[in-house]
Structure formats: structure tokens, C-alpha cells
Amino acid sequence: MGLVIISSRPPISSFLQSRSSRISRTPPVSSRSRRWILAPGSPLPPVRRPIFRLKNFISNCSITNVDIDTESITTEDQGQGDLSSLSSCCSIPVVHITQDILDAQPLNLVTEENYKTSLFTTLPVLSEEEQVALSATPAHPAGLYALYAICSAGNLVEQLWNFAWPAAVAILHPSLLPVAVLGFFTKLAICVGSPLVGDLMDSFPRIPAYYSLNIVQTIAQLLSVAMIIHALKTIPHSPASAVILQPWFIVLVLAGAIERVAGLALGVTVERDWVVLLAGANRPIALAQANAMLNRIDLLCEIAGASLFGILLSKYDPVTCLKLASGLMIFALPVLILLGQLINKLSSGVLDSFRLPQTGVNSFKADALLNPWRIVQKGLDVIKRGWLEYKQQPVLPASVAYVFLYFNVALAPGAIMTAFLTHHGISPSIIGGFSGLCAFMGVSATFMSAALVKEFGVLKAGAAGLIFQSSLLMIAVAVLLSGSVSRQNSLYVFLYLVVLSRLGHMSYDIVGTQILQTGIPTNKANLIGTTEISIASLAELVMLGVAILANDVSHFGFLAILSVSSVICATWIFCQWLANPTDEHRKLFNFDPQFGPNVR
Image (tube, rainbow, N blue to C red; front, top):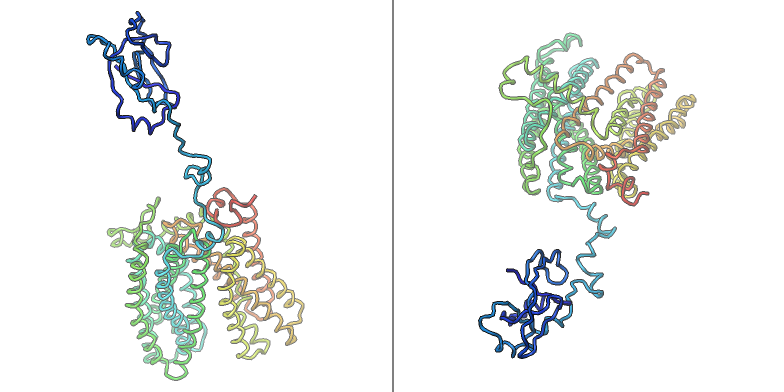
């Protein structure tokens, strides 16, 4: 039989404190009364004993669905003396309640005074200054500094070799054909092999894949050094067509292609995967600063590597210089491996985190490595899947704009620009100064891009870089086509505009990398990144083919029009994508002011 206590104001604390309540027996009274008090000696009225079910009786006593018998209830003060008159054989239950239970005040968990500070009504929210400070703080700053050390050591060796092998091959033979053949097959290997290497990297743990790529790259570099030294010591001067058919040259071509693919794969690993984990994908300012630092290191290493090998080449013979370069490669390998392990320790093992499982074609297995036909078939499948994944990435327009910039081979420092300036009688010192100023603009862009991301967000910063570059190049082409470049001052104005345009080019290069880092899934970062590099290399091959067909310097204006048109197309594609965002883009870049919660 259940029992309930009914009160108009029964606080919880009073129920917990009233341990003096007792149950006794008393005569029944009418069930219509809410408080029963019996006078001494009064007869027990014959009352029907109804049964009530109280449902959802929560607000006053927190008891639900209880079957009770309505009985007589008396308080301790009022009915304590009446119990002696009751017959001992009475079987009617009654409960004694202390008076303070009925008169206590209700318990209010949230009062008017503490309403504003209650946990039920307020949530902690970061201020705008705190949000900016958080977005500018890397997730793993110590690991990020170790990553900078890796990039400094690795890029110095790589940039030194990128300058050393063309110089050594040019010394080996005065013709441009050997260098052109090496460059062509290198670009071809990047187009074909980059998606395959990217898929392998996405399928293996990060640290072992990093070790393997460094070892492969170092072995390929040392093999190339050995072939060039062998040629310098033993091969007499012969026609260029005979040189490219020599066994040592074929080995040099293969080693150079493998070295370049491994180097680009390491670059993708650092720029698209590791830096995102260490800086934090949801911390745009910190990620922008990290990307700027990586580009800054790359440009400084490019200047330092070329200068170092140039100084060595001016003091020693080519064989000695190549031996010193190989010693630097051997010394750098254990340093890179130790630094890779150090990064993982300083970042609490974030590089050991598993990627999301991939769907589609699986990666290579051990039995496939022993079957050449399976290797070719699997490679073709991976290349096909790489192109499909590239087309389906959420930030495809930003990547296509990045690829279009690689068509700009005429209005950029390089062989075509050098030939054009030489034809106009520009001294080598000025040509070298032009290349140096372009590199300086790249270093300046690393500082400017982080400030642009902080001020306008990553998306508008990318659009600003493209618009700035395309505007200056259009003016430069107008100056070129006007025919005034035949005069020295007008030619310097043309070069000055090209130098300034590099500021916008490198700004988008840095910001576009961050956009791709944010939009590409982690488990496909290497595959899509290497596929993008493959397409960019294909764009360079196309423009170089056009330049080979239009090899006369008088056709430079036509090449310049093609170059500026590619930059304008890149700007239009990106701005159209920015002006017509989808829900997926808003979700990916919800931290950006373009799609932030304050945008109406």
C-alpha cells in the first residue's frame, strides 16, 4: 500500500530534515478534507475508503503513479495526545508530520539575484581578441619549429642540386639538348608518377613514408652525381645526339626523374599534410603564417643553394664540387630522419594519427610488386583515380586557378625571359638583378600574405593576389605591344611591372596552398596534391612546346599574350567561385569572414 504526503509548499530540504515523522494509527475521516484533526473522544465516522491514483504529481512531492488510501493525518503538535484514545486493534494507518514541513518556504534553484550568473542561462564565449589570438596560435608550436628545421636542411640540399646538375651537364656538353632532354623526362615522370606516389603515401604511415622518400631521393642524387663524374672523367666530347644515347646518360635520366618525383612528394607531404596537423586546420592565421614561413625558407634556400654551388664552382673543378655536394647529401640524410622523429615527439605523436579509410582502388600489395603487369595496371588505375579525385575535390576552382598560373612562362623569370632580354642587349648583371628582384618579391609576399589573411580572410586574400598580378601583367603587355620596349627606359618599366606582379603571384601561391589544405580531405591530401603537380607540369610542357615552335625572339609578344591570358583566366575562375559559394564551401570555410556567422 502506497502513501503520499500532500502539502501546499513542501520544500525538498524540509523533507530531508524531518526525520521525526512517525506513522501511527488513527480513525479515518472524510476523504474530501486535506487536513484531518480529531478531537479527543470523538467517535469514528463511518466513511467509505476510496482509492485515488495521483498522476504526474511532480511539482510538490515528486511522487508519481502512487496508489494511496485516504486516511486521517494529524500533525505532531496537534494530535500527539490523541493517540492514546485509539484502540490498539485499529488497522487504519495515519502519518504524523511536523509543522515546519507545511510552513517552509519553497526552494528556488535560480533566484532573481543569481539569474545572470547561473550556469543554466550563460555559456562561456571567447571575445573577438581571444578568438584572433587562438587562430594565430599553432596547435603544436614546438613541432612546427622542428618542421622549419627539416625544410631548411632538405631544401638547401635540394636547391643546391637543382642548380648543380644543369650546370654540370652544361659543362659536359655545350649544347642545350642534354639539359632539355633531362628536363623533358623529368616533367614527364612528374606527370605520370606523381599520382602513383601520392596514393602510396596516403596508404602508408606518415613517418615511415617520409623516411623512405628521403632515402630514395638521396640514393637517386648520389647515383646522378656518380654518372656525371664518370662522364666528366672518361667521356670525350662528342655530338649531342651521341651523348643522349650513352648508357650513363640513360641512367642519369632515370635517376633524375626518380629524384624529382621523390622531392615533389616530400614537398607535398610537408605543405599539404604535416603543416596542417602541426599548425591546425581550424587556425587560419597560424596556418597562413606557417605557409609563409615554408615559402620563405624555400626561396632563401634557393638563393643560398645556387650561391653556394656557384662559389664552389668558381674555386674548384666540377668533379670536386660534385663530391662536396654528395658529401652534403650524405650528411643531411640522418639529420632529416632524426628531425622527422623529433617532430612527432614534440607534437605528441600527431603524425601517428590514422587517416580515414580510403575507398576505391586499394594501394599496392606485396604480391603486386613481383608482377610487372600488375604494377603497370595498378599504376594506370591509380592515375585514373587520382584524376577523378582531383575533379571531385571541394576546392577544384582554386586548384584550377593555381594550375593556370603555370602557363605563364613568358612573363616570369626563366629561360624565355632571359633570351628576350639578351636579344635586347641587356647586360647579364641586370638580368641577374631582375631574377633577384623577383625572388625578393617572393620573400616579401610571404610576409604580406599572412597579413592579408588576418585582415580579409583566406579567400579574399587569394582573390586580391590574383587581381593584383593580372592587372600589372596586362599593363606590362600593353607596354610590350606598343613597341616602346625598344627604348631602354620603356623596357625597364616593363621589367618593373613584371617584378611587381610576382608579389601577387607568390601571394596566391601561399594562400592557394592554404585553401587546398583546408578543402582537401586528409586521407586524399597526397594523392590530390601530387595529381595537381602532375597537371601543372603538363601545363608547363604545353607552353614549352609552344615556345619551341615559336622559338624566334620576335614571337615573344605572342607568348606574352598567352601568358597574361592564362593569369586572367585564373583570376576569373577564382572570383566566380568566390562569388557563388555552395553550402559545402560555407561549411569548409566557416571560420573565414566571407562565410562567417557575422555575414548577412
